[in-house]
Image (cartoon, rainbow, N blue to C red):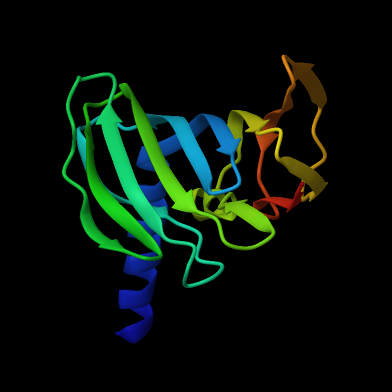
Length: 188
C-alpha cells in the first residue's frame, strides 16, 4: 500500500510540474554602496488543457542578518493586477498564480536589499525546482561609480561604460543555473 501511495504522489507531482512552466526571465540589477536592487520580468506558461492554479515561492537571499529586504513589489503585467503576497519571511515569499489552459502570463517582481558586506546575491538555482531550463534569460547589472567589482559567479558577456557608469550584460539560452548570481565588490 505504501508503494502504491508513493507512486501516486510521484505521478501527480510529475504531471503537475509539466502543467506550468517557468520559461524566461529578464532582470535588471543595480548595485549602490547601500542597496542591491532587483527588477525582474518573469514568464510562465500553462501547458495543460485545463486552468491551473499554483502557489509560487520566490526565494530571497539571506547572506547576513543585516542584509534585509525592505521592499517587495509584484505585479501581473498580463492582467494588470497586483497579487497578494503571502507567507513573507526573510528567506522568501509566495503568491498565487492562476492561468488558463495553453496561456501565458508575465509578472514583474522587484525588491530592494540593504547591502552590508562585500557581495550581492540573486538566487538562480531555484530554477532547478522547475525541472527544466529557462528558454531565455537576460541579466543587466548597473554598478555605481563608488564600487569596484572584484569577481562574478558568471562572467559577463559584455561590459559597457556609459557616462561614468559601468554596465554588465549576460544572455543565456536553454539556461539551467548550477550556481547563484553573485557579485563580489569593494567600495572606492
